[in-house]
View 1: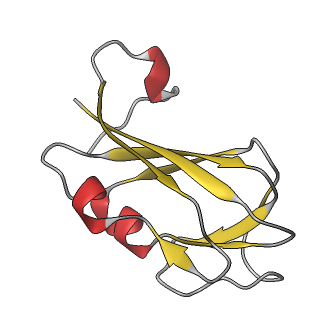
View 2: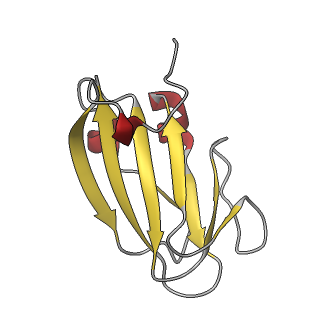
Length: 105
């Protein structure tokens, strides 16, 4: 599948399908199955709020010391339902929250 070489939010052909706020990632936490599995969802844009976190998209749980680090207000882009299903996040220094918007064509 070909994906646009620029952020989805700039492409008028993509639309918001769903949204969720994940308020507790004190232990490794994934995205909500019913949100990323909704018809047409191909992309998740995740904003980290409140504090820093770590994540993985290989289905393995991150720890507070292992996994790509994302600072407060950072954006993570996850393409495809397989990677969305495998996504896991955990606080690295506090009480992070995730604001997740799901997009599709």
